[in-house]
Image (cartoon, rainbow, N blue to C red; front, side, top):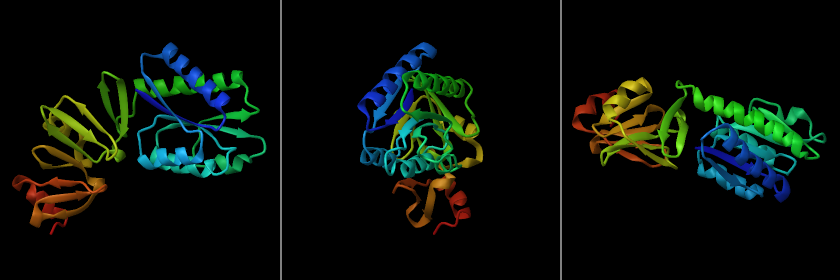
Length: 239
């Protein structure tokens, strides 16, 4: 499933982008497309705050404060494909920088032909990434909604329960079939086994509390540590 954000106060422009995007997704792939429309700065800010996984964003930076939020969006979505809606009144120096790393541009006055060309190029590239994902950076999950690419840095932990594996990002949870043992071999050193049912992201560990047999992760998660894995926890400096 492709998740897209369209942030523009113009109902006509955002409406066309949504219609065109749905049409292109249908033409170019079998993937489902989920679109979040954010007509105001407040709504985009809230979406960024929730940390929901996003593959593509089309953001109108002619709106005050949207440029700042675009940079915030990029920091939360390092691999997302960003399209900016700009104008000749805005210097490219302000938005052509690494902190935003926009990959496409739609210039105002808004022309549907230009927008369609940019969106077609964007979806073609995004779908290429879906077909040949960078597995060094992404966990690839295939389910009934299609393919989902999840950056390793956003994953908090994997949990085995009810005969499935659940991937938890702190904001979302995805279930799939497999085993913790298979994942442990596949993921290597970036994830740590601390229990027969848990693999945790080393980068998300805030503290180890051996007196309570717990790992404390970002987001307030308390993950149990079993006796078998206590020696590993001591190496992390647990108390």
